[in-house]
Image (cartoon, rainbow, N blue to C red):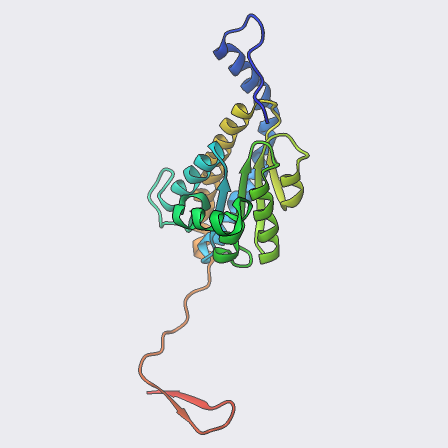
Length: 226
């Protein structure tokens, strides 16, 4: 999506802030979506699930920003959470691009790392990037929950994902800036929900020690621990 230029007579900063202010009002309606996503993500990560994130260019940088907040921390110390920015594995990325084509660079990693009910978050200002669309198809085929940060909807990526946060601005710079705000708010909701999610996760079962001895030749032999 091409960024719109400054209006005649305005400074670059004034025009940029005008575009940002115009997008902020509809963006406020994202609160409930981000709260729901944060709660769902916290419960998924607390029970051993994983977040996979992907984007191109500036959106790749934002994807890595998000995973850093989750593997590291946003504010207070807490246990690390499993989140992977798919573009950051450069050897895999270049190998996949070389062997399978650029549109497969994220999809193949989704099929490798994703498990049913994991979450895939795809970031795109345009919502038309072929490698992200291919990743969304791979995510759905693998049983992942697919979310998207995009610019104005409708767009192809938004239609492929289960849920979308669409920033209503014609300026891709403003879209990316509000994606960063959404990232921080999402992580805030994860942190708020995480203690409850951790408390609700199933307790680990008893660990058996010793040597397992198989008795008999039946198809379902008795196993005893000594």
